[in-house]
Length: 297
Image (tube, rainbow, N blue to C red; front, side, top):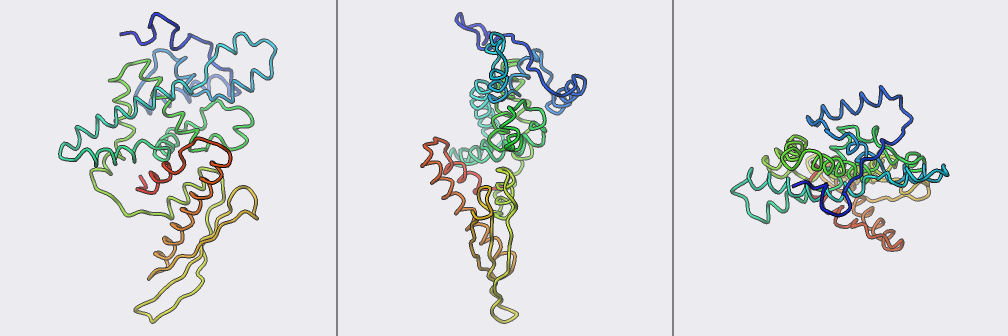
């Protein structure tokens, strides 16, 4: 079945490649390297170009020209992201079902939620260096869009959607199996202890904020039964005045830092949830944070 021929409007038009600022040979080499990493080479390069085109890039170009007929036909990657999200969930479900025949539906669903979330997708996108290949509008790029977990995760899903259209399910399944091999192996190895320090650090880096600062406030008790109190401080938003601090306790400096990092991470979750509610955003921050806190893949 030809997914691009439904008898109605085509899912994707053959459109010109987006213009870019990189020299053409360098850009071509980067795109070639990406396809080597994926072990998949596109038959229709236009699909690859669309997957790496953010909405902001086309919006900028439309605002800068009076000749809009061609530009208005170009497509950003959001439709491919929609398709790739569904394809990814199916492929991961397929892999988990066959790799772990002894596991219950509940455990498989739990693992799938850990694998198919913004944190894991962004990590894989960074390994592929998608941020360097994305066509972003000037404002989005200046605001750190090439490093945002949401932008990178969406781009990876769009890329998978493009592979599905270009080569079919077996092709995209093979790509997903390769990209998620390490994460699937970690499922096989069993759950790991939550590492809130690493999780907090990666989250702050993902949204372009400074790393947390830890300070030992107090050490009590005899040598064989020490009790440490450690403060964790993070700069929230872009102003030094917008900061959060939480205190954690533990029998070692490390465990106290973990407790403080956990407290600050959960405080960030509450702060973002409140801001999302006030702004009317529909982004499921609570669900995303819940997934991220379960395991650091």
